[in-house]
Image (cartoon, rainbow, N blue to C red; front, side, top):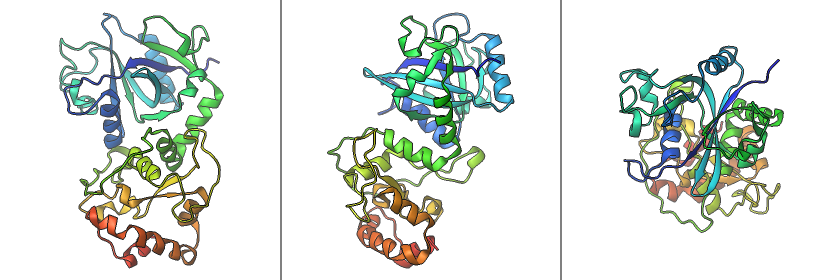
Length: 330
C-alpha cells in the first residue's frame, strides 16, 4: 500500500503587495483565521498544471476517505526558511475556479480579482482548512515521493513537489490538530518577537467571529500572546520562581499564554479582549490550575491577577468588576 501523498510548495515571501504593511504570509494567515479556510494560488508561468489530474484525483480520494492530507508551504523569508502547514480540502487546476465562484471569497483580495480571467497565472489552487507555522526542523521529515530525497535538498527550479512525510511528523501534526489549545500554545512559541519590545496599552477593535465549523468562536492572535509573554520576561505571573523547563524553541523558561477574561466572553465587550493587558504568562502547572482546580483554590490567584491588571484593562476600555471576573471561573 502506498503512503499518503502530500504537497510541498516553495515560494519567496512577497512584501510588495498592493496593500499597506502586508505580505504573502499575513494575507493568507488572516484569511484562514477568520474563515477557517483559505485558497492559496501558487503562481507559475508554465502553461501546464503544476499537479497532474492523476495525482489531484489521488489526493482527492485520500481526503474523501478522511486521511489527513497536507500542504507544506516552504517560505524563503528574507533568506530565512520558514515552514507552514495546511490541512487539504481540495486541489484545483488553473481555470477550474470561475471568476464569480464563491470560492474566490477564500482567496486574498490582492489576487482574487484575476482568478478565472485571462490574467490568471496559477499552476495550482490549494484549498486548506488550517494554516500555521511549525519548526523548520521538520523539513527533514518531508521527502519526494519519486526519489525519497529530502525536499530541502532539491536544487531544481520547480516549486511544487509531491511528497511523503515521516511517521513522527504525521503523529506530531495529528496531535496538534486534535488539540486546539496545544496547537495555539505551539503557535505562540513559534512567533518571533523582539526581546526588547515595548507596547502602549490601547483599545483594539472587537475580534471578528469565526466562520465554518467553529462559527461563533473568536480567533486569538498568537503574536499578541507572544508579546505578552516577552513583556513578562518568560516568567510565571503567579509566582516568578516557577520554572518547569527550558523551551527548545526560545531557549527561555517555558510559559503559556492565558486570557484572564476568557476569550469566550468577547461578546460582552465592544473592544477586543485579545490584548496584552488581558493576557498573562503562566507556568504549565499554574495554567492547568486555573482551568481545572476547584474554585476555592484559584479564587485568591484570580484576585491577585485582577489587581495587577485592572488599570491596564481599563486603558484598553475593558471594564470588568472583580466579582464579574470571578464568575467566569465558577
